[in-house]
Length: 82
Image (tube, rainbow, N blue to C red):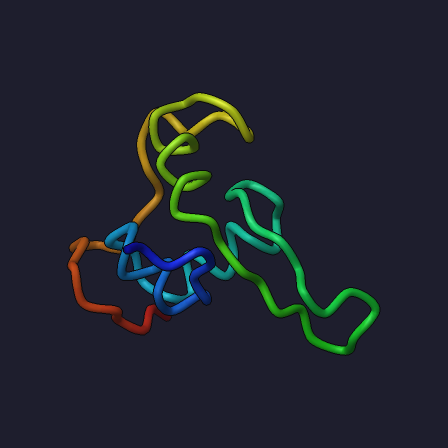
């Protein structure tokens, strides 16, 4: 059974991106996500694995970029970017 919603760290691992890249894409509205803290001081995003899959495939919520923005070396581990 897969998880219904991922937090930013889990989404970064799922996508093979660093955490800061996922956060920047989320804040810019490029990656499909939902802010579960609207009106709060800090955004708290949640991600649907199915929506992320559609985004990567270029279907549904937004179009995936031609070249997936990533850190210098994509990894299955979550890394901090600068």
